[in-house]
Image 1 (cartoon, helix red, strand yellow):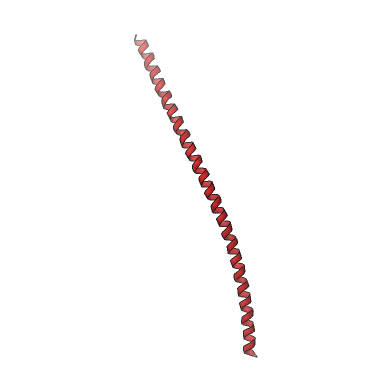
Image 2 (cartoon, rainbow, N blue to C red):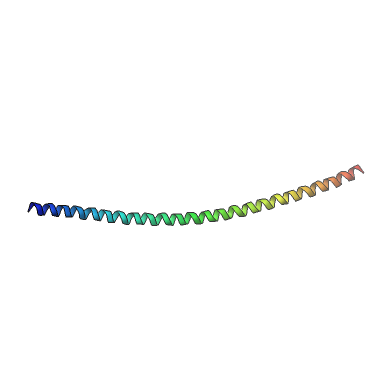
Length: 87
């Protein structure tokens, strides 16, 4: 009878360990799914940020070119004004 109780206890203990292992695996799967969803969201956000950064870099380059054109035209106009003053 004692041997049977020991076997039953061992079986119960094994059953508990298996149940805990199953619960752990399920929890880890849920955590993995959540991490993958967060990764996808972060990657989408990164792509949006990179696109915005690229657009802003293009706009900055265009503004610098425009500023240089304005500077050149103003210098030319100032040169003409100086010529008028000297004449």
